[in-house]
Image (cartoon, rainbow, N blue to C red):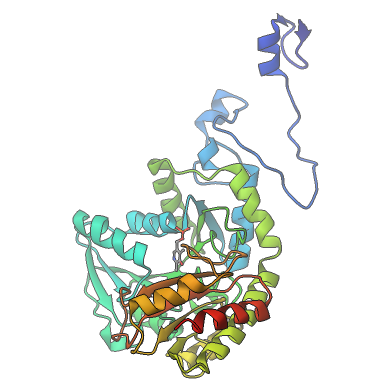
Length: 392
Ligand SMILES: *Cc1c(COP(=O)(O)O)cnc(C)c1O
C-alpha cells in the first residue's frame, strides 16, 4: 500500500498504485535528444480540455497518432530543413505520397505526373487513384509543352531528378506553369533531401520526403514526411492522416532525429564518392551512358548546375548494347561490396539491374543498373566495380 502524491487521500493496492504513480513531465529536460516518447492515450487535465482538443495543432497532445514530443520535434526539424512551416511525418515515403493524393484529389480531378515517376507512386496511381475516378495525365519532365492542363487539373507532381534515369527538370519553370493554371505543385524530394536545394525557394506547395533514405541514413527505418507552408493545407493533410489511422512510432522518430544530426555530412560524402565512381564508369568502354545530373552530358545538367549545390549519391549506368540481361546480372552478382536490395541512402552500397523494365522518356539502348553509393571508401568501391566488370 502506498499513498499517491497529489491524489485524493486514498490507499491503493499495489497494482493500482503502479498504474497511477505520477511523474512530472520533463519540461525542463534539455539534451541533444528530445527523448523517445510513446503513447496511445495521453491525459487531459479536465473534460473541458478534452472538449477543446485540437487535432491539427501542436501546442498540446490529443492521442498517440496525433503526435508526441518526439514526433513534434522531428516534424519541426524536417520543416526547418526543407524551408517549410508545417511538417507531418508518415509511416513511409510512399504513404506520404498517397496521403497527398488522398487529401487533395476528388473524383473528376486531374493529376499531372511525369512519365517516369517513381515506380511505387505509379502503381498507387494506376491501381488505386484511377479506380477512384481521378484522371491522370502524364507529361515529359524535359518538355514543358507536354503538360496538358484542364479546368480540373488540381495537382502537378514533380520529381527532381527522375528516379531511375536522373533527368533534371527545369523546376522553377514547371512550378510557374502549374501555378499559372491554378494547380498545386508537389515535389518528391527524396533525392534532394533538403540538402541539394531548398525546395520552397522554387515556389512549390508541398514537399514529400522519404526520410527512409538519407534522413534516417541507417537503412533501419521506413518513414516519410510532408512539408508545406500553408496551414490550411497542413490541416487538411493532418485530418486525412488521423482519419486513416496513421501513426509513426516514437523509437523510429527518435532514430530519424539522430540521423538528421549527420545528414549534411553524409549527403556530401555520398555525393563526392558517387561522382568519382560515375566518372570512373563513364570512362569504361563497356558502359554506354552514365545518368547522373552532375555529369555534363546528363539530360538537364544545366538546370541541376543552376539550381543545386550538391547531388545525391545515386545514379544509373546503361551498359553497351552487346551486353544482355544475363551478362549484366553477372556483373551485379559479381559485386561484393554493393549489395542487391531495395531503397538507397543507407551506409551500405546497393546495386540492382533493372534492365529495360523501367519507364523512361526515351528507349534505353542497353541494360540499366542503378547504383546507390554508400559510405565505404571510394577506392574499395571502384576496385569492387572493376573486378565485377572484368566478368563481362
Ligand atoms: C524510396 C522512395 C520513395 C518512397 O519511400 P519509402 O519510405 O520507401 O516508402 C519515394 N520516392 C522516391 C524517389 C524514392 O526513392
